[in-house]
Image 1 (cartoon, one colour):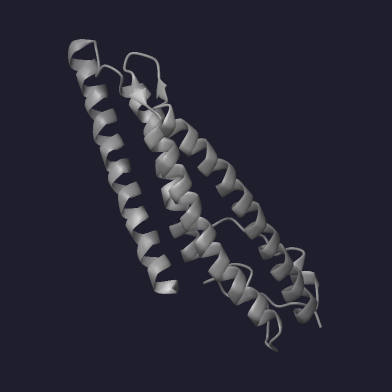
Image 2 (cartoon, rainbow, N blue to C red):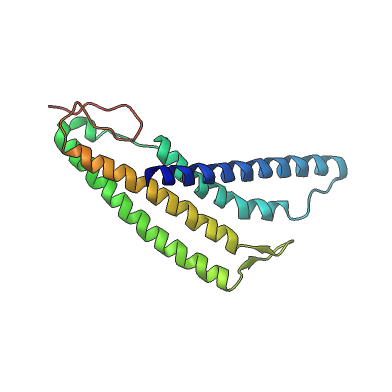
Length: 177
């Protein structure tokens, strides 16, 4: 299961990277065209507004997998090892529950949006529903990565060890004794 989640996470990161590359080329082309002719691509701002949230959500699971989200161990550093691990595990369970609720709400919104073929009005009539679906897919991947990390965290909270791993993949911190 973990390898399937990792493949999904990597695939979503590749899609996010390609979308970022597209945005970079589009914006650079828009700037050059504006400089040369006084007028840029029609609707480039609207396209960027629709694509950018998808880029962020598709990349979150990969960031979680690599342990690169912002984390602070200032409280855990002051606790003995076992209580620190237990508190960290409890926090991970709460985050997992929050992500599950967020995924549920986002998925319902994406389904409703797809059913009505929601679009954004402006210079271009851009469809918004595909982006909403990508947001739900990105959250699903983040939830799966977080579930795996939570499972590891809860399992390790029962083991004896030298410290607490606040972020999966990061060095362990030393709790007080």
